[in-house]
Image (cartoon, rainbow, N blue to C red; front, side, top):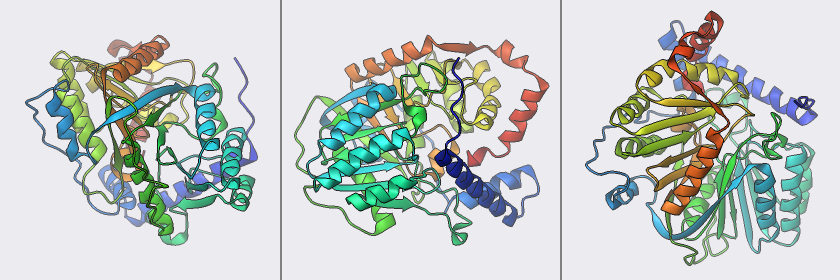
Length: 444
């Protein structure tokens, strides 16, 4: 087993920034006058959300995922599905970093990137060098980073000096004390308006390598071409315009896109100001229309009561419901404790939960009935559903779903399945941790 890497100055700086934001959240909670558990939860929620949002849905489909009526109905979520796309999966840093940086270096007119984590380390250097090279050739390069999640360090000046335009989403200031938790968690790269990427990638050395040990995370990106790229570009534009006021339009960002394949796809987003949670609507529709199998990989799995009930109902009507989550290797142990608080309900209801053992798994994917798949930045938690800016790519295609399912099955070989009897035997200390961290569930 390899030793943990020493903490870098960039990582330490980022940790301090995140501690500061956590302190602001705590102050916002105190400001709300928290007394009892429910009041704590509501205080966190009100501190994070700018306005009320519909988060509970009624949906009783007369169709199933395999029927065309399902994907036509997805027009209510985002811009609707479009044909003529081609998508491929990239596993782990050894595949992801070379592909993304190569496309940046080959850019002709524009590069637009948005990410939650961008660190001043080896991974950050790889991306910064590619962005700098593109900007030095006259390519219009824009980078949106989250002010809490990222620490550009010395890379920031190098990129700005080379012509990279950088926007920081929701900077931490004293006057944002009631909204410190509103972050962009999106992970987007759009090149020339023709090539798009999304997935779970953070620009951080933990994503380097091939998940060979606990220091190399397991993650997945998707590279897509075709008409759906315009939807990804539109999602990038939202936060860029919000942060800079600049409107991006024209062929540099929205060229005429010809078909590159036969896949039907669409991009969905989540934004703080939305009146409904589009990710949750997508999950509820998909879970309740599934008939064969529903396989989910997610690093932060804290489904709310309605989603838990939907998963159990699917399992009880014969759907093979399996959820793959991180095991002991988890960057946020409190979320693992919180997630385990809900295991009893799920396990008793027939949902199978499998914990990935080799390293931290950060993929955010779902594949259903051999035809429908999603991959992107969205977690199964309250933040992704209602607070953060998020995005995901959905693909309605049997070949792509087959590739997703094959990857899920490979990951499953490195998991330990959680049995209800074993979970019941956990220690009193683990039970206490679950209860403590459950209190802050809306914040995660």
